[in-house]
Amino acid sequence: MGVYLLIDVGSTYTKVLAVDLAEEVILGRAQSPTTVETDVTIGLNRALEELAETCRVDLDKVEGKYASSSAAGGLKMAAIGLVPELTLEAARRACLGAGGKVVCAYGFEIDHEVVREIEEARCDIILLCGGTDGGDKKVITHNARMLAHSNVQCPILVAGNRVAADTVREILESHGKKVYKTSNVLPSIDVVEVEPAQALIREIFIAHITHAKGLDKVVEFVGAPIIPTPQATLRAAQLLADGAEGEPGLGSLLVVEVGGATTNIHSVAEQSPVTPQTIIRGLPEGRVKRTVEGDMGIRYNAPTIYEFVGREAFLARLRVLHPPAEEGDFNPDRHISHLSKSVGYVPSSELELNADIVLAESAVSIAVERHAGTVRQEFSVVGEILVQRGKNLLEVENLIGTGGIFRYGLRPERVLRSALFSPEKPWSLKPKNPRLFVDRNYMLYAIGLLAEHFPAQALRIAKRYLTPVSLEDSTDGEVQVGAGRLNYET
Amino acid sequence: MGANVKRRHVNKAVVIGTIGADAHMIGGWVLKKAFEEAGFTVAFLGAVVPQQEFINAAIEIDADAILVSSMYGMGILDCEGMRERCIEAGLDDIILYAGGTVAAPIELEKNWPEIERRFKAMGFDRVFPNTVTAKEVVETLKADLGLD
Image 1 (spheres, rainbow over the protein chains, first blue to last red):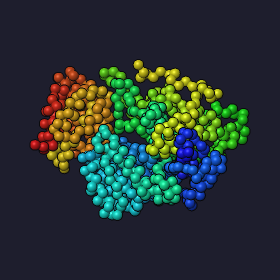
Image 2: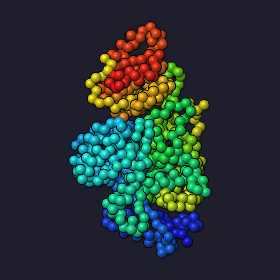
Image 3: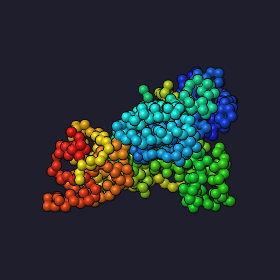
Image 4: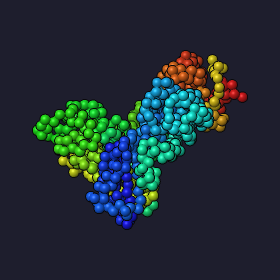
């Protein structure tokens, strides 16, 4: 029959999705609170039981299983580089693209205080970079010495100046640190090469971190290595964009993932200049990019969004979606505080559902603005010139929403609007007119898990179950995307 | 002035770019080729490069010199404060060159000594007019670095 189970041991819920690969259908899904603090299999078994009951999936006929995890803090990484905009930025990208969470990031020479912060952050991996190949050696060597004398126990991945790498390794190993070494994330000033570091991060995750996080039993159960959840989502995004053999992809895309604690943005699109004459500045961007707003989510981190937006603006936006007459004794302060404490909360009233939409919209708006590139006009003696930083997403063909709110939310497609280009901010290169999709089944991680072994089937399932949506369906407000004309359009 | 005799080590690495709001690329590009042929590592930053980006690149590649191109006549304005920023960034002994149409063409013709004086006052080691060849710049820097 070809039943496969796709498991995600998330920070809040352990989810299981069952698919029939022969029929290319989703058989069902179930979830139960994650129990990684005690025994991860308790939550997993509950989810499996529910799956067997509600979806009548015969667990004895399962042919294969794959799993991802973001439990126990996810893959926590420290990024260390030299110049913040150069090797540190490249190091960050390496971490994020491998599915990591950058919990601390430092440029230049680190001191004892920084070392203390790194020790306290309890990272899973430290990525140590600095200097282009043949460039600066002093700083990475100094930083290696500081780490060598620290209490850091986690593996240290060295991906800096090739000329200094052996010395750095020796310094760390002579103090008993576990060291991995790979090629430089920034071999020369205009070349970002994060893939070798990312491949090694995945290996380290499999070799050390699944064990350290109490996920051994999941590995045992599925009989295959676990990957970090964001990496699964990123793989799904890539598969959806680029296609598989015999099955075309959807083309360039942007995936917005709204979680309880974080908001993740994934893009699969070239950096492409807005006009052929545009000058591009900053580090070159890769086709596949992931950014994370680590302090913006609609449950645990709801207060951050609320504070960022402000009480009045929050209420004003809520009133647009929800007539004030029905507010009753709604107290936004209390509601937000409640959300941050009950991470699994599903709203019970229309008002609360709309409050979720406002939170998600705000998070997505900020997160996509930070992910997307910008363009600015400079006036010079030879006339007007355009200077672009980051990725031009104006022509991105698809926009996909995923995360809890797209499953239970009230017309959640409204959240996607805030990921779109706005004539009020023409400098922000957000998508202008993409096709819109919502991941109602919360299946993207599962597609990513299948992508490696069954790309064509996974892709067909994804295309079948992604729900196309249109913003014109929403009753509130009309969409004017693309109506404003950019002054850089000729 | 010119040669910085106290430099501790030579890494044969230079940063090249066109500064300010200047979109000209070709002068810097010709220099890049010449320096690469002479065996230097070159961080070529292209056009419209802010001061800080020159400095950032110089730190990462451990550069011996920053070569600033300016073709649109506003070079003096754009280069102001660059030496101070370098010192702030720990690049106290880096060599700074500027070159191109670094001031209005009429000034270049009539007032070169004054232009040279102003660049030196800003902490630049050398400034070259737009008539200089790439080969001359390479030879000059090699001499300043004490190479062959």
